[in-house]
Structures are given as structure tokens and as C-alpha cells.
Length: 347
Image (cartoon, rainbow, N blue to C red; front, side):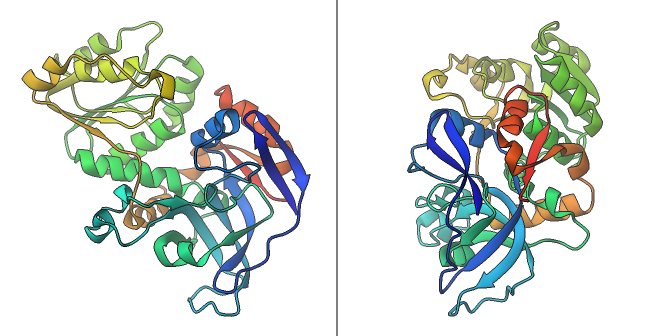
């Protein structure tokens, strides 16, 4: 089969490798589509502590069951379309037992602990079928969009924790795919005013398709002053930093209203993760600041339903669908911000 093999940070290639064998208690999936995530870009560039090289990565997957193992007892059958998110929970730690799966202490992931989806075939092991996030593609949802329900799941989880609701003003700093998904979810949860900010004009222009009320170009305008102006001087009820830029976390504290809720959603580079914050703002403005990155199975189910219903429009998110042969071009487009979301099809 064809697959993208990552040999070392910055060194990957399209190769022909042996097709995986279906495990007795698992599934062999014929991958049809695999989305390119921001974390994939970081792994391609810098490697990842959980990825043993050489490796096949890619964790936003949709495909057709090619084969089930001889001892597989589940309900999936060959020919079923599946959407596979990477998370495999242990089901035994104190967080899993409390239903807080996003905090699983023994979390494993497809494309880290097992080969991923930038390949024509992929194994879904029994562990992922029993304790993972594998769902049938909902009727009416195109598979090239269903594969990207995984990042939407994390965004839904974050806004649930933030309790975004009717009448809230929401500031989203960062207008890439994640920021754009956050716009959609904030709309669906009843936010009355959605403000987005970014330093890149091209990103701001692309995100207009998702219906933000106001766009702030932070290269030209002070995001704190402009947010206060747009919220009658009080600041945003909710601020989400959907980017890997340290200064936006300190800006979030200043842009938030009294009693505001803030999510540091975008992870920072390891060498720039110590940020100077004015904690008096948290204290005197009674702010709630959370960190969030994961999701539970219920969030993936909801993400697929929101996509099926058009509340998260896949046709606007996925700006490029490319053959796996054009992997390097897709990576370049995404890294340079010239595409919203890149999805690869296996041909």
C-alpha cells in the first residue's frame, strides 16, 4: 500500500509498504480520507514523544471496513463507513471512572501508539473498538467532512466547560480551522456577539464564511481596546485563545469582562510556554481560566451530528482535498496558512 512514512523530524516520504494484517479481534479499515491537523504539522516538523520513528501518523480518519478479525464480536461489518478519532481511554483510572475521559491518565492514541491514517489501510485494534472513539458515519454526512469531527469534538468540550450560552459575547483569538469551528459552536450555543482576531489578513478573510460579527486585524488594531469598544466598554464574557502564540494568553485576561471565562485552547511551543500573566486581573476581575485539550466520546457523537446538520459546515472548513501523492504540497499549504483545512484522499 501507499503510505507517508515519517523517518525523522522534517524527513518524510510517500512509500510503498506492506499492507497491515487484520488482527483477530480488530478491524482492517480501507482509509478513504484523512485530515491534516495542526498537531500533525508539529509532529512532522519536530517529532513527538509518543511517536516511535519511523511511523505513519494521521488521526482524522474516515474509511470503509475492509475486513473484521475472525474473533471480532462487535456490530461493525465489512462495507460500513466509519469515522475514527484517535483517543483510546483506559476505562480504569479515576478520571475515566468519573466520566472525565478527556483527563484519562493512561490515554493512548491511534497515530501515536498504533499506525495512523496517512495510508491506504489502517488497523483499528480491539482496544480502540472497546474504549475508543469509533463511530458509523452518519447518514447524509460526506466522509471527507466526517473525518474532521475529531477537532470539532475538542472545541465542543471546551465550550461546554466554558458554559457558553445565550447572550454571551465571545472573543476568539486565532482564525484557523480551530478558531472557525469555535465560531460555529458559539453560534449554535446562542452567543449574541462573536468577535474574532488574527494577525494574518488571509486567515481573517477565510473565517468570514463562518459568520463572525466582527473581525479584528491585530497587526493594525489593539485587540484589547477594540474588544472593549465592541462590548460597550466591559470586555468579552468568553475569550478563547485558538492559537500557539504566548502573548494572546495575557491579552485574553485584559480583554475579558469582569467574571469572564477564558480558555487557553491552543497549546504553546515547549520553549515558549512560560508566559508572564497579570494574575491580579484574574483576582480582581474574578476570572475563570481553564486549560482544555481533550474530549469524551459524547463530544465526538455531537460533533458528527452538528456536521450532519450543517451547524459546523464541512464544505467551508475543508478548503483542499488532495491525493496522498500531493502530501508535501498540502503540508506546505497548511503550514503557510494558505488553506483552511487540508484533507487527503487515498487513491
